[in-house]
Image (tube, rainbow, N blue to C red; front, side, top):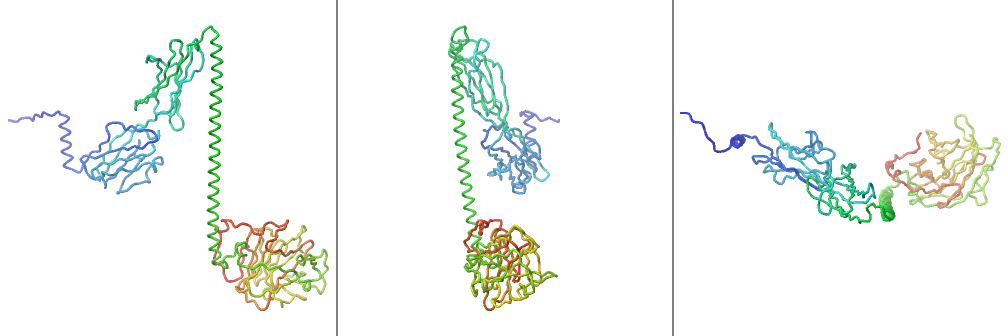
Length: 545
């Protein structure tokens, strides 16, 4: 006889147990999430927990929480670590994995600083090999805003119009009017709006015509959390409209009250703006102070590095001067060409307005040109040591092809009578300026355009290193350097000048003239960052061709 099995358990429970037994016998699993919605306050932290059944370690599983679509990842855990590349931008830095019980199959994602946009449905997804399961979760973000606040608008249609407002609520709150006995009063109108953060602003109106209802309350309640906030207003009976002088008194009182409230609000707002402005000014000053301090520290650090190997950096004459001794000298009239005019102080050189060339005038010939060279030497003899001096150049307002000047050093025995050339092979180490260009008389001549008009040139002589360098003391840029020189005998400062209205002036290191900007411009971080410490041991220039 074949008998059918008779179970005392309900049919549904039987199938659940049967499914559980089949799961225990395989690698399959179930994902279980909270059965009730998770309620959390706006701005607070919350966790979205999930677990697997039967309990097992999920360390090697792929675990994912996502919002509405699989690609909207809140948090992704795979290969034993977080996969931040798939995470939504809104959750970066706000979502983390809680894995204290990951070996037992219980994990959660914690979301920090909840936003209104976090509200809604989520899924937690688990994958092991080819088996995958997911569970549904619901997160309800709530915000108990400010209010309610009740205001008397004024008399209307034989009654008093009241307005109840509140803001910063989420979700939309339930609003209810009631009298002193707790009896509900329907609103005349209700308006709600949402701000940029998704929070609700509510405004409800009520018209009270019954003068016995002198006490009216307005309540706002969050539908999920159930918390309620209430405010009550008392309406004096004389405020209700009547054919009596009290109507005028009510209007006057209301106007005075409105003016008073407006004045209080205005003063409070003005005070807040003042405090905010003072705070911003203070923060800006602190920021500037920190930036200045940081700049000074960086400048000091880089200056220290510069001083350790200053010869390799052909920049920053203001720092370079600290390694040299300033020399004070005058012009030697005994060495001056007749076509040059020296001032009484012997520090200024002028060119005569009109000069006729003849056979006795020394010239500088190059590529078919014949130029008169009117030169003079400094009344000082330079030997070993590092020396520097500065020369102010004024080429006048009429710049022409005949405007020419040169300055630098030359040997005390260099030939300057008759025909001669200003060339290192003839013991002249000078830079020549003509027609808006610098000309460097090396074995391979180059004409280089000056980046910025210079009115003050610095000459640096390093006898021991065999170096003569020229700098634009206006912008601190390097003009040219003669290197690898073996000096013999003594040297003297050299000057030559030609051109109507042109002049050269020997300046002390601390001189500042009205027509010449500061000769020691502050070194900027831009210059610092562009410093090249490697300098070839030959004639160099940092000017573009």
